[in-house]
Each structure stands twice: as structure tokens, then as C-alpha cells.
Length: 123
Length: 311
Image 1: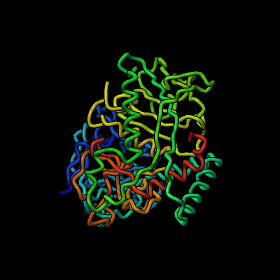
Image 2 (image 1 turned 90 degrees about the vertical axis):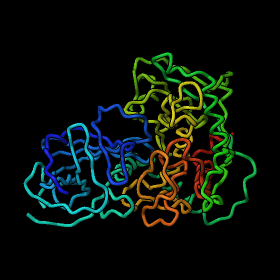
Image 3 (image 1 turned 30 degrees about the horizontal axis):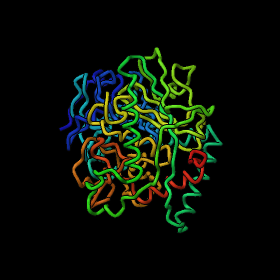
Image 4 (image 1 turned 45 degrees about the vertical axis):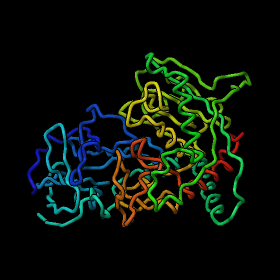
């Protein structure tokens, strides 16, 4: 069920806490969380001005960062954009966000695209 | 307000609609920044393709590679002992000769693909000046940890500069930040940073190692990159990537922990991801095989850009 997410609860840097994933959800924790060792962790940083920095796993396990924009839709879908226009490159349907943890639903979802939210690029 | 139905990219088993990772684009940008690296990588891919079209005689003698391990430490615990270093060499010599007993856990459908890379490793007995050496250097640093920026490979940046990278496999062992277990460099890259970096608590099988990364497989994985192997999910999240090896099924994402067989992604059923391959991201005790295709790729590297390492 879609629900409203407070944008302030998702600002900052987040890393994939894959140890906490379930069959239906993906979990992100704040970057300063004491994660156990891992061969690599993806993540993202969401800035208040709408800027996005995605952290990916490089082909030799070094981290790689790509810049973009982010937008949170009214029904709690976090959208990532590579540029200032076009379709999102990635959509994360947020199940819950309590300031320390973001839980994202896996599987096909229906999201509502809203315009004019924080950092929403033109389409 | 417009309403659109679309598939999220966090699918458990399906194929996402969109490319969702910039990893390979960044890699390609790096190749553009270092044209010589790009040229050498392209040449190596051509050599690999040519080798797949030929039928060379089966190799009978192993490739032997001298290794130097640089222990970079701040605390006493980080200054791991010789026994721990040697325990890692033992693991490499099992995994790179397909002599690891746990290869028996390979699912029946893939047992016939398990291949012996025929690579053997030994701590160097002579240093770059020709003097006797245990093949282990120890360097004290003031840094509490290193990132993945190659600083540990430089005296000037608080680390230890390499021995000649065309003659030794350089392995740096240190504390890494952000929980990173290790990283590597493909063949053809800058010589000053060539080699692999491993977290000290994931190096070898004794001393300070901690489960679930206590069987030395982080080094097996990173040396795989050093010999030009790619991740089995092809470094994209949308099934469009490739590891350039045909006998590893296409996979969507890294697998973590200890997956249950089968784990189907990218329409790769019924057997799914080959997550027990050393080039996935599972726990040490859940990975135990290279395939024949990966072995051909590594041998192409050892007969090409890494040839000077082989003794």
C-alpha cells in the first residue's frame, strides 16, 4: 500500500544492508552505520537540493560514483534520474523510512508520478 | 498528475525495464582517460576471442607466479603473522589448481564445468635486488584505515610502494574503510597500482580472520580480477552486462551470504545464477569454482599481458 514518506527522513548517505534483505524487501542503512565487511555495497546520497550521487560497485570491486537527480513521489516512490530530463533510471518503492533505515519493496509496483516535488526534473 | 504503471528495478527474479547502474559507464570513462589501458584491454579481448576459436594443446605445466605480500599496519593486531600470510598462499594453490575439497559441493549440472586454472603461487624468495627474502614486507603507518583509492600502494600516501609489478604479484594487506573486503586492477592498467588489496581480517585462514570471510576466498576473487575475470553478473543490474565468458549463466545482481540453489534471474532457469563461482559475492564457504571459460580467459592473460610474471 502506497504511503507518504517524509522527504527529510531520507536525506543523506545510504548503503545497502544486504544482510537484512528479505524475499520481498531491500534494506538501506545510513552510511555511518557499523556494517560488517562485504565484497561491495551499493548506495546513494540524497541532497536537499535534489542532487543525487549513486555509489555503485566497480568491475574490480572499487566503488564508482555517478551524479544525477532524485525525486520522491507522493506515493513514496524514490526516483533517480541521470540528467535533467527523461524517464527515471531507477525507481525504489519505499515501504518505510524512519530516519535510520529505508525499506524498499521488491517486485513490480505501481507508482504515481508527481511533478514539482523536491528535485523533480522536467519530463 | 499522471499515473503510470512501471516495474521497479528491485525485482527479485524478473528483468528490470531500465539500465540502473552507472558502473560500466564509469569503467568506460576510465578507459577513455587512459588510452593505453584501453588499447591493452582491447588487445587482450581480441586475444581471448582468438583463443576461443583455436584448439591449443592442453597445458601440462602450471603457471608459477612469485608473490610479495605487503602488510601495512598501525596496530599490533593489523601486523598479521607469517603463518596467516602463508595460509593464504595455501588457499590460492588449492583454488587455482581446482584442488579445493569443497568443489564437490558444485551442483551436479555444473560439475563438468569445474576447471583447473593451473596457476601456482609462491612467496618470492628473491627481492627486486636479488637478495633473499621471505616475500613479506611490513610497513607501519599512521593511517587507521585505507579507502579504495590506491593510497595503500604508495609510500608517499602512508602505504607501501610496490615491488616491480611486472615481476611480482603484489598483495597489500591492511585495514580497509567502509567494510570493504578487497579490490583489484585489471591487466593493462597503470603499473604503479597493479596488484590486489585485501582486508587483513579476510586474509588467509588463521590469525585475525573472521567469518564468514575466513577461508581466503577474498584473495581468490581479487586475483581473478587481476587475471582479467569479470563479475558473473556482468556489472550491470539489468541483465545487459556480460562477463565475456559463455559458460557462466547471465545473472542480474551480485549474490550475497549463502544463497539457496537455484536462484533464478535474467531468465536463466532452471538452474539460475552460478553463485558458487569465485567471481560472485557470496560468503567464503559458499564459493568454490572457476569454469572452463574463465580458465581460458585467465590463461590468455597469463600468456599475454601477465606473461612476465610467470616463472
